[in-house]
Image (cartoon, rainbow, N blue to C red):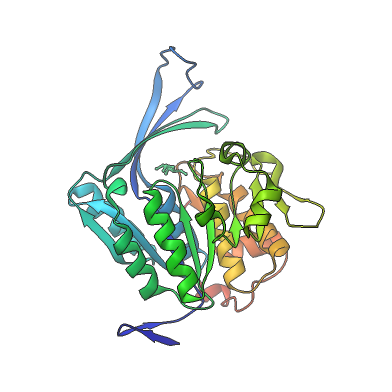
Length: 321
Ligand code: RIB
């Protein structure tokens, strides 16, 4: 236990810096091609945003979780924050800004494939100075700070700097992808892109490792995830065969579970195995948080328990179904 700025900080926790959105989910028979109009079979409103999804997934996996992000001073912001709080996330570092809460429109086909269009709104106004202070207050050695890219790049850099100063690990999920400054890449202990994002970063693994990235974990959808380390052969961790209903948020569930496993002391390979199972299971519910698996559910499929796992009766309830 450490004390920072009057706040008690327990080190084994995940601090998630990222977006919070209200998702409008449209079910379609097939995803539209460019210029095509398709009918919608049903619609639903759900809580989303890559950062908020990651924080929710980490909390459901039973780890102390803090969310750092920005919402508008509106009903969507209230609902998004209240839902995170209900799931056990510490929302004390959420900034209220004078912009509408972020929104995403998501079309999903019967196979669970999707496309996503995001209106950043308040996410785009997240203040780097707020992020730096919030991460400094929340992180300590033993903490993992996880960031994604639906917020200003300066805010992500601020999170990486504060993580480094606090002696915490820094994991970057470069989604949605963009070119990244060397300063940010060299602060990454682990970079977790999907295969499309890896191509969009336009930086070869050898250069990432030369800059100081410790490991690369590339999510490959139905195939699973590939762990790439310097001077080691790449390792493909296969996905769990499941009946996928909606792949929205699978990458969020994956990276959250990876950070939980790392924070609890698992090595890179074991953390990938834990995360692949969590990501696979998350596709069995509708919406980005339709099925966030509990720790025991993931452990049952992996065939082992995480260090310090609580007895099944003591763990938090899984969200969705
Ligand atoms: O990763 C899925 C998320 O991407 C959705 O919840 C949507 O809000 C977008 O941020």
